[in-house]
Length: 339
Ligand code: SF4
Ligand code: SF4
Picture 1 (cartoon, helix red, strand yellow):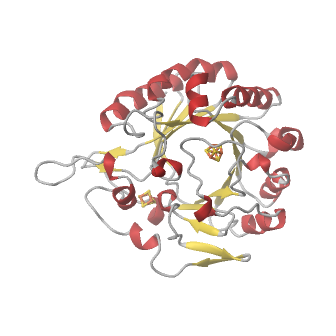
Picture 2 (tube, rainbow, N blue to C red):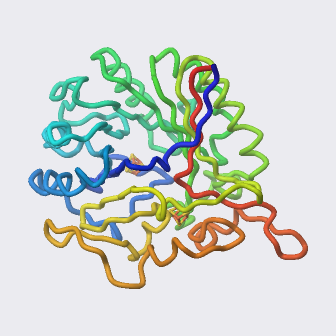
């Protein structure tokens, strides 16, 4: 039976998005890492473990995703994974660009990590390599094959922009052939490198796709892929005016941790020094006003306040000045499985 559900606002679950370093071997056109805001340091293992400890027990369930930069550049990632499982994280995921440094797949067992999540931004090698760097397509495919052959669960993340939306449906066969279990569609954000706008010739006009294009392509393609037995998750992005808007900063327990100690509750805030929490040494403390949490409660007809501030180009207004639709929280996702 087809199962479509809204995810990411799960109550009683703490989700940690842990950037253990910001270094990366690639320099993707849409990279959201901003070293000025997120730091350049690599966290020592002891600090990673202590910061992981800080979030266990906050709710019934804790999940962690290790990110970077490229997290496999951290020589002790495997020990951090083992620590996370040992102290009770229900699910542990590693997000990687596929280069799998330091022989990570030989240092952890499939039972110790729930998913190795790869990033590919084009079904065609040419498109992916234009966005992520020459050779990155082949390296990612090799990495997926190695992970699958060693018995790891794998997922794939595809960041949709105007440069690659037209080949999204071509990824279907590749996902099946490679044995990938989950497919995550993301939407490009106007932040990090994309916000700097120095990508001539990469995107046709705007990196983001229009509402009509998004609604025309994404739900249908997601269903098509799900029919192959793959669980597909994609951001809702657009809400009808009658649909309920919720800000994850108020109703969910997500923490985006950076190696300089900043802890954000909202990914769209990450380009600014308005994090709501931070680690002072190993102590997690709230920051002073004004910070992101002061924005979460603001109610505007356009939906997400941060979207209105940093990427208003995706809004549309009627003649009387009221919005045509609302923008959902960027963390609101639809999940399709069991078709
Ligand atoms: S792989 Fe990730 S961290 Fe590295 S440049 Fe690309 S988007 Fe940025
Ligand atoms: S993206 Fe918007 S709605 Fe979601 S947490 Fe941030 S401010 Fe709130």
